[in-house]
Length: 227
Image (cartoon, rainbow, N blue to C red; front, side):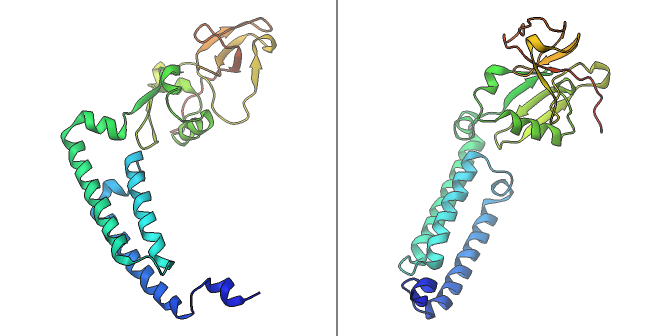
């Protein structure tokens, strides 16, 4: 085993000092570039902004430690990407249609304590991920939600039901027991695990959801939200 090749690849020890210089230069370019992007570019990223960051990262990484990759082409890539970003954000500010084309639109996925199934199917978000975000908003069941909107950056905005309008809803806390329609333990309020609709059901009878036709249920909850 040749330790020089293992540690340095095909380069000499002197290239380590050059790597320090290259990394310092490119890191400075990254910081300046992100500063030029502004606050919009460093918050929770939209798809468009994520593409910009990936492009900048690709341009910055290679010249830091590949000797045959020059600094000037990478800096030129940064200049072009940032220029395109500023141009596209200008167009976004001038055209609502162009903004929708580039960044998409917010999607309402819960309304009046029930999933909007047709909208939910369009979005690449799993139930577990959605429930996690709702729990971070102190939501224990869907009956506490008047409306939930999946934003362009992947965050979920939640509008709460007034306490006086609180309804039964699908519980989203972990380890809540699930039942099929033929194994309901007792009469009571149950919520469909597919669409979220809550309804009163009898024990041990065949029950299909009147909204979506599924037969998986959880005992519905009407607990108040902890604020």
